Image (cartoon, rainbow, N blue to C red):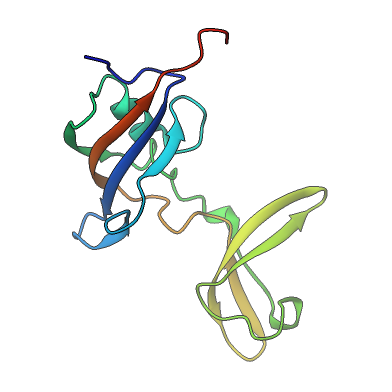
Length: 145
């Protein structure tokens, strides 16, 4: 039976949970998620755990913050003038900012009349995550690669 290998395109169903059990994402009642193993399309810990799985196999995977969305970096959170943000922005919105030539996504964490707190850390940074996954299909990597 085929086992998923680096370079293969796989389709999975997943449910992702935080340490407190809250669900942060799921493909339940949707099409399976498609990704190529080893391509940096997903977090490292999940990518590694899928290698070696067979079609139909289910697994619960715990991913550390370091192998998930990274550790929180306090220097990526800062206070900015509220006027620097688009009109109508709300807490939780994701915005594209620029630091010199480099684009950076930031999330709005807090707002008041004069200022806003924006954060370049992913909302799940610093958290241990648990995934229930089912491998739905494997499309082997092309032998020409």
